[in-house]
Image 1: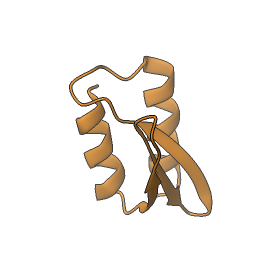
Image 2: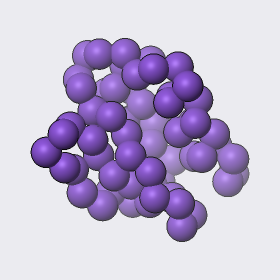
Image 3: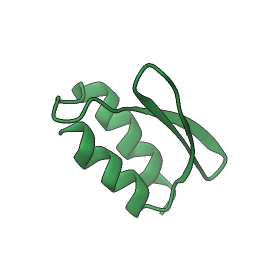
Image 4: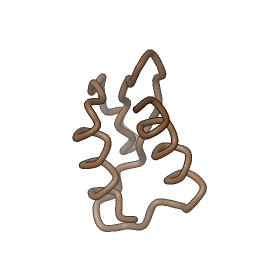
Length: 61
């Protein structure tokens, strides 16, 4: 999954954007869990990273 796609899914799930640091990572809070989403535009997010983030945002529903 591309970084942009994952970022959109996180936002649609209702995660609260906290900040973006200089190393191209966006930080979000979802149900008290703070996590970072690597944001490198059109690059693919590693499978394990993607699965972990999707587990956070889908596990709470």
